[in-house]
Length: 285
Image 1 (cartoon, rainbow, N blue to C red):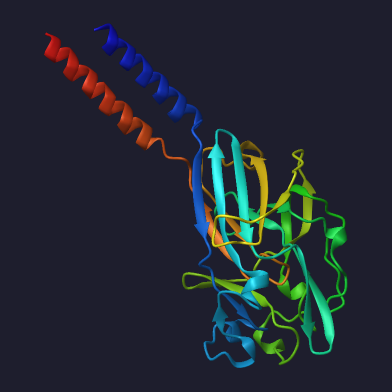
Image 2 (tube, rainbow, N blue to C red; image 1 turned 135 degrees about the vertical axis):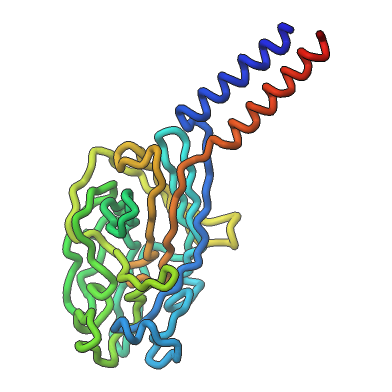
């Protein structure tokens, strides 16, 4: 009888700890399955003939340089840890014709309300280290942002970095210029990628983004790791969407939803133990 009472007490302790506080670590993986299109207009991005490099593809450019393998997300209590697996080293020279342009580590975008608006972002590489030498002559809209978590009002996209002119509509399309992944697909919908924050307010949390040599996941070259407080973006008890363009040219976009840790497994385990305890008590009687 005492043993059964101990089991019941242990079960209720586990249930209270696991379901109320989401204290148990819950890892989740977002795999790279988002296709990007190298092109200048939506109509060309939708094409599949590959003319002028406008067809859908997994990676724009060399996979050995730009490939994004996936994102590991671990929710533990109020802490959310992200590990970004990629071959991108943070900066790379791209050749377009006789000129060289540079791509840099893109900002990480978060849609906390899942309404299609990425209202939070993480700067992984401070914008002051980005080169202003873009094909259209424009430097990033927010060149002074340092590494950290931001509340975001607007985003720059890859066309701000890798096109001879900023042309985001079909009528303005002309051939030529550097290839870049201006659009990405989610199901049947096509979107312009959020590559870098244009306007943002830094929150109190300062992040230590760590770059390590990749191991364990299809041999990625680099892993970028950082953590944020779930309460700071209002997602402690709800799912949220994330997007990462890899580099400022959106060479390999990745998009997905981070779910809320499910306590159902813990509950089922607890109910099973309760049933076993009750069965043992009946046998004793």
